[in-house]
Amino acid sequence: MDATQPYPSDISRPLVALMKGVVFRENDPALWHLLEEGQMAVRDYFRVMGLELMLDTAEGYAWLATREPEEGEDPLPRLVGRRQLSYPVSLIIALLRKKMAEQDAAGEDPRLILSVEEITDMVRVFLPASGNEAKMMDQINTHLNKIADLGFIRRLKGEKDKIEVIRILKAFVDAQWLSELDDRLKEYQDHLTGGSDKGPAGQSDTHPVDDSGIETDMDPKPAVDGGGD
Image (tube, rainbow, N blue to C red):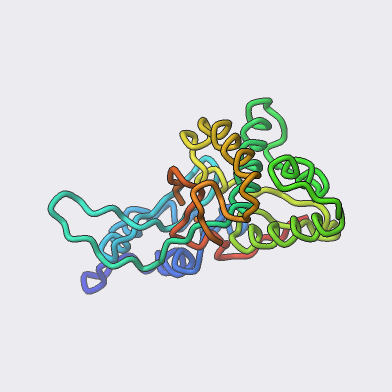
């Protein structure tokens, strides 16, 4: 490394990619290799910006998270604002995460692919009763489009009624939150009497989750678009 250059030149691509969004190994193996090889330098680079590299080598994705200040350290301004998700979007994400956990536990195909109809059947019990099936399907599709924009799902090419759940969802709905999901789903069912599209804690329209619903402070969309099927 050049003495005048504080960081290896070959981390430039990973740095740019991470600033654009999530990096997936399957989308660009060469980029992923550069990231793994230079991860210490990447961590050091982003640390001074108040960001932390989150690298999951088992699942094959990486993203930037806001770094928590150390004791005695003044917090830096957040580069990305936090957003809370609406009740229906939060609900669908939670149910998809539960379905992924069930499939993993059964040792089945790691790719979770569901039809829009299957997702609608999963969700309908937690939504106000509707006599208009077409309207409900339209609403579910609208919520799914929002989740796709967040980068948690993608529609399969040539099969727009089929949804693949992206495994990075595991990083945003963690195991502790998932273990409390049954209680949360009961809250969702109790909420039906409220007649609102907000969640149990009144959240409005992603990373960690708090006690009130799913919340994130980053954009999980991929830095390099995946192809789907």
